[in-house]
Length: 296
Image (cartoon, rainbow, N blue to C red; front, side, top):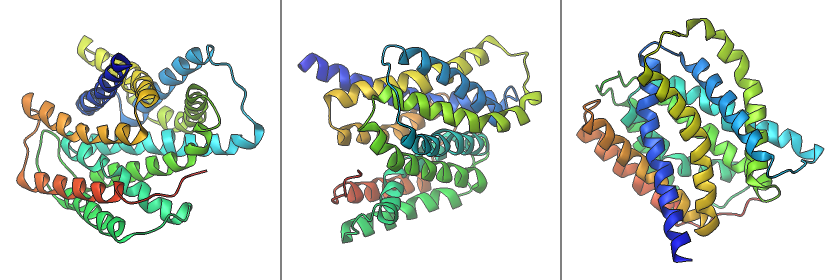
């Protein structure tokens, strides 16, 4: 049992380490002019969908017709809108900015839960939401300078991406309790891919097929590791530790991403970004310790 628990924590750490590398790798591919954001998402969606369909042969399960609309919404929020805005935003902002804004996800989920499932608003949650969003807004409005220009539009797209992911988490919860996780993610990516195709094809002619081996490996990393293995690692972690513990690992992403960016000389860290991070961390903490209504 102790061995399984250790492996679970290693899997969760590994998933978030992969996410941290993903920020820089994805940005290198897009900044280098090799693959535009929308087509990059198309590559990722096609690759991940195929891999999850292959994996699903070991978990054969039918879905009810009444749940198709919910799967379609999950595909829209969790893949189509989520990924299109994330990669477009990452192309315009810095990896450090993007990773910091992403940890505001628990706060966004909390806000959406108040309106969508009538979750209760406690004073701790209200203060946490205010502080956390203030931190995210500070990052968005801060015109920093890193390897890539940290533009307000790019940061805003990352924030909208986090909001879309928040909608996905609320919408997918009933499906996760009804079906095997592999079944859920297979259909989520299938519907998401349908929405991605027209956007991806619109930029397909801009792909520079003359790529270095380094760029090809980074594209493969995003498809295989960031999309496929990260999900499997998280599933393994959830099996042996609580969802709360799993969710706290997201806080590692800005730390690991910042370390990688600083170590490689890609970007520099500014005082205002550190201050903004502390605001978001504080807000997330206050929101996380407040009682939340169960999603049915």
